[in-house]
Image (cartoon, rainbow, N blue to C red; front, side):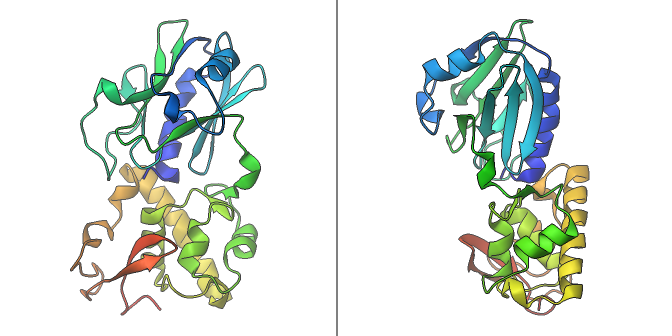
Length: 260
C-alpha cells in the first residue's frame, strides 16, 4: 500500500492541480528526494511552471510541467497525497489514521494559495525528477488481454511473482494480487506459464473485476479475502485454513481447497 488503486485516487485528486502555477517548493526532508534530485534542482525545475497533466504509471504518480519536465511522486506503503487540505484517500492499511504536519516530506505551493503535499510517516516514498518510465510495464488499468498473456503468463516463475513484477505490468500490489488469485481460484505458487488459456483469461478478467471493486469500495483494503489475511485465518469461501508463506518477496495467503 498504496497500490495502483490508491494511486488512481491520488491521480484524480491531483487533477485539481492541473492548470495551476507552482509558486514555491517545500522540501523539509531532503532525504525524500531520490535518484540524485536535490532541493535546488527540484525548485529550479518547478517554480514558475504550470502543471499540464497528472498521470499514473502503476504505483508512480507523474505531474507533467509545461516546460517538459516531469515530477514523479512515489508513496511507499504509508504516503498520502493531500491537495488543498483534503487527503485523496481516507484510509491506508499499514499506517496510522493520524495526520501530523511533521510527516510532510514534500510540497508544492501554488500561486493561488493552494498546495499539494505528501504526508508520509515512515518516509518510504520519494520524489524524482524526470523518472524513468521505460522501466515500468503497461499500466494495470490499461493492459489488454494479449499483452497480459505475453508479459505475465510465461516462464517458470510463480504467477504471483509475475503479477507483482512492475516491469511486466505496473500497479499490482500484494493486496490486489492475493485477492485476484483467490477469486480466480489459482494457486499463487504455480508457474505463470502453466496456466491454460481458460485459466489465463479468467485471471485477467478477475483482475479487472478486482480493480473495479476496489475503486468503487474505497481502496485495496476492501477485498473479500482481506479480513482473513491473518495468522490462523480461514478462507471466506469454504472455511479452509489459509496457507501463509512468502512468494515473490511478499507475505501471501491462499486456500489450498479451491486455489489450484
